[in-house]
Image (cartoon, rainbow, N blue to C red; front, side, top):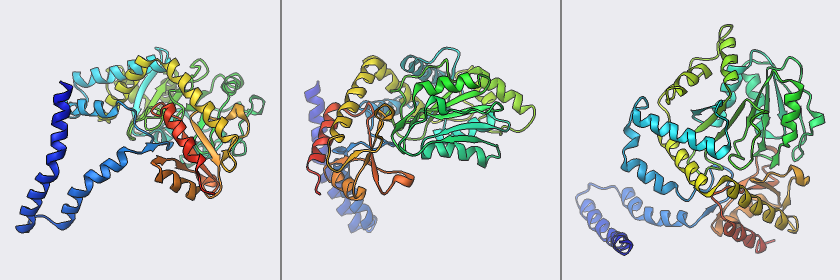
Length: 409
């Protein structure tokens, strides 16, 4: 059967150029096909083959998980893009994704799982729904800083503890004001490659148990395990660790956050679109408040299922091995060294390197079919970033390091 299928595929690609040439010649002769379209028809297969050979170590959007293409085809074969988000078909799809995420990430049954357009949207949603006036932010880089700035921009009165780029906050440095309503933390800082220490979560909860604790896990889900006893909200987007196309945010919420939102709503506006109470009501029905990214939700459920088949402990073990290999290599590289010096604070999923001439390094790697990310914000001109997500194999990591062996000086 496989031989037959492969034969059909080979024949299709072999005959395709001939068919295109005949059709193009006919269309050009009759002035019905612009020359730009002709170039596009012949260039597309070449472009596709070029991109297919590349490995994306970019920190988001990242390398696609190996099974995504198959699941996309299945989604369209089943015509799931046309089903109503108020239908039984969608509820089954929605609940499957929720169940697979619970299993994969160890999410307790009392937590609810909502879907949004992005994690950036959730910065605003969380603050508006859970804060009357004051939030407290631990800032270890540019993305944690943006969470803090969102609070300012929507008219709240946030405070923060900020540490220098490349360093991590210690539990004894946490200073949560007593009037704080929400504690905002970024578990893995994508801009610097710093990972929050779990003891910080415990310290924040101990200092103000009445405050809601919200944790940004965008760049470390599902790799970094979370103690859900110390948090009330976790959120991420799917284009990083899950290896999916961008356009879907995931909001993991304890019911007490919904209660807080209802209390605030009785006093002031919490917005009109995708509020926590609306998410809660629709979640109980296996639905979403408005028409969602059905493809994204479907793919997330299927990839989470694939990961569960492998086992999260296996995936985490492999991730740790790859990270150890990368850091050991770059600790001894003559020109490209880890930006985060404190080994306990180093991210397992985003490796930030201090390099000379980042643009030159990125260009060289790209010429070898290896795509990495530039530095971010203040670090753009002095660093590059390398993702270590589940879609990347140990062999991919070894290939990357081999390219750095031949990096021109």
